[in-house]
Length: 99
Image 1: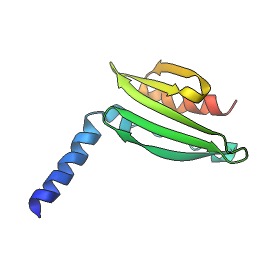
Image 2: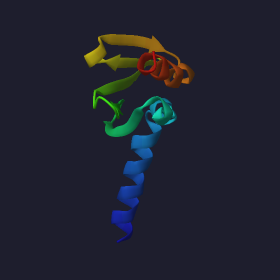
Image 3: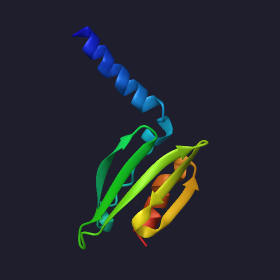
């Protein structure tokens, strides 16, 4: 039992700390603007974040990756690829969705 618990805790630790910049980003709450946040998951080095417009049901998936201390934000549906510091990601997403 201890080995299983240790392996589980170790996997959580490794997945969370290897890319701490990605896990530290807090997605903006855009519910008042008509966008519902839908966390889509992550894998090592990549974080997927989705938003759905509650009126039109239009969805946008943001793919966040970290490279050289910068965050690359991709939204294929919108044709957006941008590189920025971690602190600018929430405002960038808000600006893209709430025009």
